Length: 209
Image (cartoon, rainbow, N blue to C red; front, side):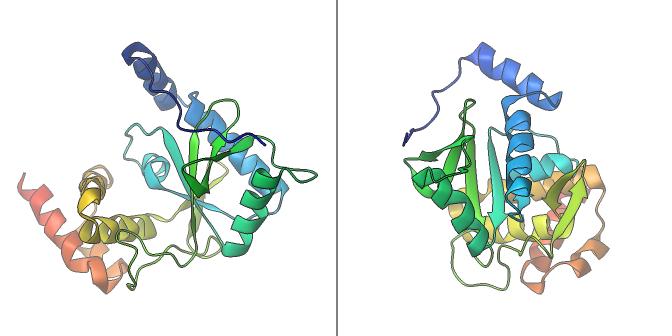
């Protein structure tokens, strides 16, 4: 079994080239996502993509160098244990990541894949009315890939940014979604009450800019 650490930092020119490839749909993240989805489907493991890649799918196109997904606890065990143990018919396109037992890296591109499980809480990890969804109930298919719905993505980003001081970028992500999707105050009614006021606060900030 191979356990690998973090991928080496790219040079400026390589990072720029990778970013251009990502926006064109041909980067390492894109290739890894397609392989990951195919592998999860072939093993009948339900999933939903969240994070920066989901932002891209919903219209806010910024660069990201990792993939975040949500699996059920049962799906996690069926994905990570074979990767770690190299069991028969293993998911051989991934290696365990030394930094976390819920993170793997793609082979050969080394893209980090972070796994959250249904019921986990975003941000500070403390109990709240918003949690990681069941992939079966909060997904929309875009170009053959299951992404978290726009409403749930906004909820997760808001709850994270509201409760984790080191995740303020998540609030900025919501501001950008408000801009590119032209979300209106009425959108708040589709969100959990826990985050409605924060959404409206961010909307007001954007509308006054």
